[in-house]
Length: 159
Ligand SMILES: Cc1cc2nc3c(=O)[nH]c(=O)nc-3n(C[C@H](O)[C@H](O)[C@H](O)COP(=O)(O)OP(=O)(O)OC[C@H]3O[C@@H](n4cnc5c(N)ncnc54)[C@H](O)[C@@H]3O)c2cc1C
Image (spheres, rainbow, N blue to C red):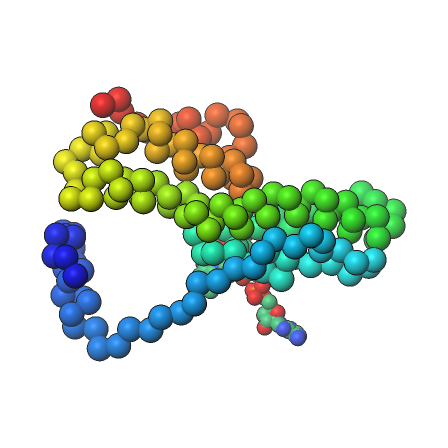
């Protein structure tokens, strides 16, 4: 391990050196499905769209699935589940595919690729706007960034 990673409150190298055993777990997802709903039966959550664990999104999307309004607004269960399928499947499929590319954490890869030996000022590596575009673009995709101006309240400075 490179010892250049330093934090004020803990020595990451020491934590790694003194850890007796490491366990590796598979990172896996599934190809987006062409259909979730079959008559009165449908899928939601991980059963419908298992995704790589980036962007804190697995449970969040499962909750959005469950909150879908369709059962309340359609008379027939079959029609409701078909509408739910049409609305939720395209966006969650895009999230599954985006997570394969790192989701919002892609911003870390971007900085690492441009400054493999570290940097003094993040603004020399990527502008605020460029970094925000990656993160906010993902947030919009995931449905976390309503266009109500909240995202623009994040404090930032010009280089
Ligand atoms: C380590 C880790 C960290 C995570 N961190 C985050 C995070 O920060 N943010 C986030 O949004 N998501 C996170 N996730 C993902 C999130 O946990 C899942 O996306 C979410 O739990 C999916 O919910 P679900 O209800 O679809 O499936 P599950 O939570 O898997 O629930 C399925 C349930 O069905 C039960 N079951 C299975 N088979 C049967 C059967 N035959 N009969 C009866 N019951 C059955 C299971 O026991 C389970 O209780 C994380 C996941 C892991 C593993």
